[in-house]
Image (tube, rainbow, N blue to C red; front, side):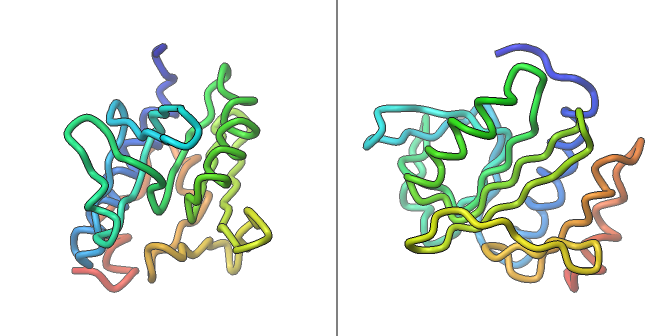
Amino acid sequence: MSAVELAHARIVQFLLRLLGDYAAERDLGEVLGEPYQIRFAKLRRRRMPDLMFISNTRSRFLERMQFEGAPDLIVEVVSPDSQTRDRREKFLEYQQIGVREYWIIDPLVKGVEFYSLKRGKGYLAMPITDDQIHSIVLPGLFIRPEWFWQMRPPKVLGLLKQMGVR
C-alpha cells in the first residue's frame, strides 16, 4: 500500500466523518475505512476500499479481520496508480458481488461518479439534481461534488444540520 496525496487523505477523512456521523446519528449502520478489508468468497478476492458503509441488517457479516460479502456502499478515491483498478476491476467486482452503491471520487480530474445497483441492469449512474447526489442506502444524505475540491471541506456538523440530523 503506497502513500496517498493530501487531497486523497482529506477526502477520505471528510467522508469518514460525514458518513460515519450521519449513519450513527440515524442508527443506520457503521462506516469503516482501510485497512479493514472485505472478502469476496465467491471471487476468491479481498479488497480494502477507502471507505465502506455496512447497514445494521448486514452487520452480522462483520468479522474480526474482515467483512464477508458485499457492503451496502463502497467509496474509492482514485490515485494515479488506481485509475484502471477503481474504474474497471473494482467496478465489475463490486457490481457482481452486489454492492448497492459505488462512489468513485477522482481528485486528479475533480470528477465524481456515483452508481446504484439496479437488479438485472447492473450499475446505473446516479443523477445530480440541484448540484446534489442523493444516496439510496443512506436515506436523506446528499453530497455536493464541490465539497471535495475545496481547500478544506465544509464543517461536518453544519452539513448534518442541513440534512436534518442533530
